[in-house]
Image (cartoon, rainbow, N blue to C red; front, side, top):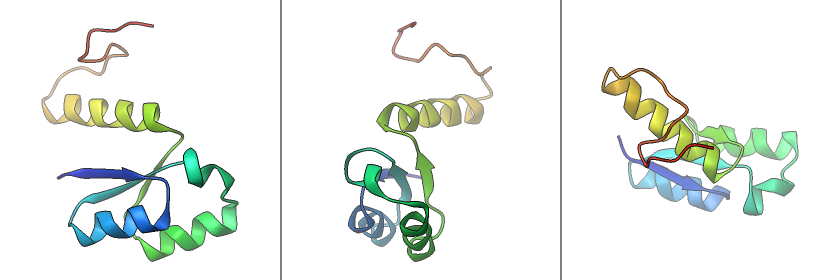
Length: 83
């Protein structure tokens, strides 16, 4: 499955139209959404996963990949960085 990330309804609709997994980051344009607006957006694009920001989205992808490979979850990324 291919993930597509965006910060607007238009981005999520494009992801869905392309057959990708829609992922919303609550940064950029989406930072101003209230709960009601977010609910409407999620109703229009079912299956959307919501992330705090791009970093949280990247961590989600890394954890998902580790799980798919049967690797133990780690706070270290595959990019070699520790915080």
